[in-house]
Amino acid sequence: MVRKTKQKEAIFRVLSSAESPLSPAEIQNRASLLVPSLGIATVYRLLKTLKEMKQVVTVEIPGESPRYEISGRAHHHHFYCRKCHQIFELGKCDERIEDLAPKGFLVQEHEIILYGRCPSCAP
Image (tube, rainbow, N blue to C red):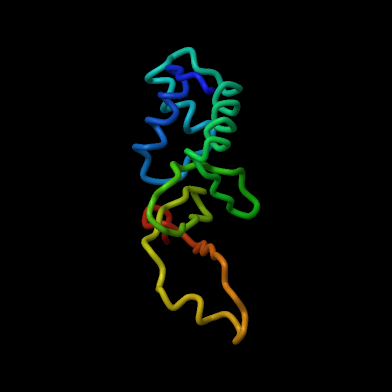
């Protein structure tokens, strides 16, 4: 049985209200407003626990540290800004995405990451 703690609840609340995946440092900064004594080691430990409980998922961007978001969200993808390093959520992809696979291949899952510059960083 996993205990319910104010630290875990703060992290879960932060991730539930986030508009995009967050790094552990971003989670700590936001959750510290709810639990001022929250340390980064606790954030990492609780993210691991929440992942094991399948309440959060890792968002992997090649070459970047993992970010985290709440699980159970509708299917979506991400945009990575190469200048400010923020990640933005994109909507659902085209349902015909599986048609890109060669004939006879069985697609089990997919992930799409778009790279570029966000409106704040665009030239």
